[in-house]
Amino acid sequence: QAQLVESGGGVVQPGRSLRLSCAASGFTFSNYAMHWVRQAPGKGLEWVAVVSHDGSDIRDADSVKGRFTISRDNSKNTLYLQMNSLRAEDTAVYFCATQYCSRTGCYLYYFDHWGQGTLVTVSS
Amino acid sequence: QSALTQPASVSGSPGQSITISCTGTSSDVGSYNLVSWYQQHPGKAPKLMIYEVSKRPSGVSNRFSGSKSGNTASLTISGLQAEDEADYYCCSYAGSVLFGGGTKLTVL
Image 1: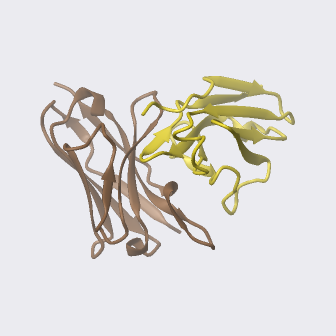
Image 2: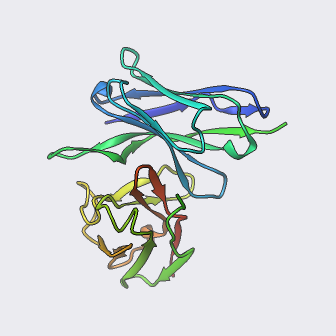
C-alpha cells in the first residue's frame, strides 16, 4: 500500500525559506516521477512542480519558477520542495503525489497516490 | 495560461445522473487527450477518477465516465449516491498542468 507523508510546513514570514519533505513507503519510489500540488485555503488545486524518477528532469509552474526547487533522494525514499522568497500567495496545503501508472504504462501528468498534505502559512 | 472553467456547483438527487463541464481552449483541452478528473472530499487528498479523457483507473466505479467535445471535457456521474458528494476538479496539460476551479457536487 503506497503511503506518502509530508512534513515541514508551518508559519513563515514573507521573504523567508522553508523546505518540505515527502516520505514515501509501500512502493518502489525510484520508479515514479513525483509531483507537488498545492491548494490555498478554500480554493482549488494548483500544480507546482514535477521531478522525473531519477531526478534528471524537473519542470515547474510559472508561479514558482526561480523560487521553488523540487528534488528527490531515492536512497532515502524522500521528495523535497525547497521554497525560497515566500509570498503570502504561497499560503496553501502542499500535497506530494506520484505519477499514475496503469498495467499498460505510466503517465507523467496524472496524479495517483497522494499524501495528506502539509500546511504552509506565509504571514508576518 | 488560465485555469480551466468549471461550474461552481451542481446538484442531483440519489439515482439521478449529473454532468460537470470543463471548458478550456484549443491550446489545452482541445489539443490534447490529457484530461483527468479528481474527486476531493472535505479535508482529504484528491483521488484520480478519470484519465486520458475517458479511462477509469482500477477500482473506480463505472458510474463515473468522461468525454470531450472540442474545447470542453465532461464528467458524468450516473446513479448518484450520497458518497459522491464532493468537490470535483478537471485537469489538462498544455505545456504545463492546468486545473479547473472545481465544482461542488451536492447530493440532495
